[in-house]
Amino acid sequence: MSKTATLNIAGKEPLELPVLEGTLGPDVIDIRPLYANTGAFTFDPGFTSTSACESKITFIDGGKGQLYYRGYPIEQLAEHSDYLETCYLLLYGELPNKEQKAAFEHDITYHTLVHDQLARFFNGFRRDAHPMAMMVGVVGALSAFYQDSLEIANPAHRRLAENRLISKIPTLAAMCYRYSNGLPFVYPRNDLSYTANFMHMMFSTPCEEYKPNPVLVRALDRIFILHADHEQNASTSTVRLAGSSGANPFACIAAGIACLWGPAHGGANEAVLKMLDEIGDVSRVPEFMEGVKAKKYRLMGFGHRVYKNMDPRAKIMKQTCDEVLNELGLQDSPKFKLAMALEQIALSDPYFIEKKLYPNVDFYSGIVLSALGIPVSMFTVIFALARTVGWISHWHEMIAEPTQKIGRPRQLYTGATRRDYVPVEKR
Image (cartoon, rainbow, N blue to C red; front, side, top):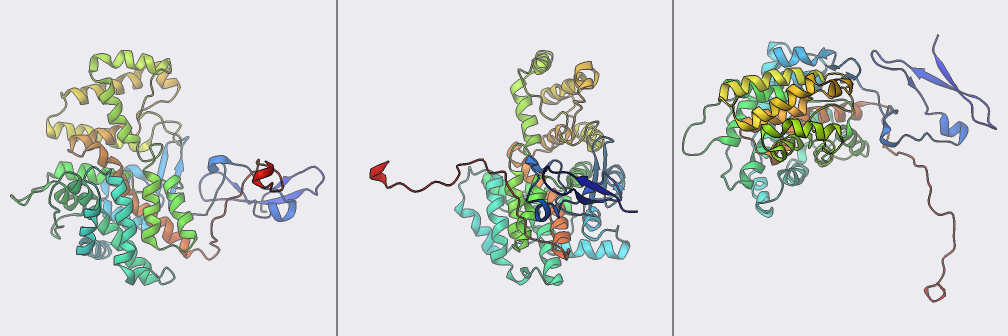
């Protein structure tokens, strides 16, 4: 027998609302009949109690510290999979077999070049422009160069656009970095893996052959996996809302990048490094942590809005952090000793344990990215690169949904009631 919820509003007949059950997670009260039957809306700033869509892609249980991509625990994917295989899983719903994996990797690899005129697009930016400002512009501009994949009702067009976005975003991200630093653009190499190729485009020079370090490549690939999707967060919801209007996929992903740029969303790992710079020296860590308790300072990279216990990605990222620091011999560098001192206090002090202020994925990923030589201004760009496949997967799922409608949130209006215009000479 299906469950229902009864809503009683004074002066109106009780309204029976269907209760929908997912495969995991809480039940959802279907309020679609609410306005038609009662003339009332719900009020939910931030949509923290509202399910805006049905999805089969990612599941999060913040209380239990669970994150699943298509049912697979993130811990298993981070340990055994690679980023492109994870992309296939998110896009198609299943892990690929050997032939499917090879074909998908081929399709992505041979779309990594960007139109030569798009490279000239960068000349319109100031050299000191933030890389995310450039990313918003150049990703949105892809629709001007790849007009053979803009018909969203055509499945072949959708898949072509999706492959192009996954393959070209790393190229564009590397171009943003190199343009900001006065370096020549580097063409992608088809003989390298997805992540090794990105590092090649970021760090190589025309003067000598670039040889990616496999430990560092695996670390960055793991960062990509951990950030590939995170359910209906602000940027994913932005992509879905933009897509609901019928906007082309390049424009939708540019909208997601713009939302991710916000410091409350994608800028968290950047904030970690700024915090470490402000602390300055490991000797100041105890004083800083006491200041956090007194609400004098903000502790960045600890705790999470969704995860009420340990962020499941943080344990994986901690291991990756140790591997990278050992590989590069940075365990004793001042900044990283400072970070580890913060971690030690947060994991042992009763105040932080009681408030569940555990290190999250942003704390460790910021340290790893810094160790890899990636500047703080590029951190959110790396996040956008990794999250592109998640955005695309949600966009594709939404477009294919037959009941999909244009997003149109309602409001609680508290402004002036009707009033008549008064000519200026009588005011």
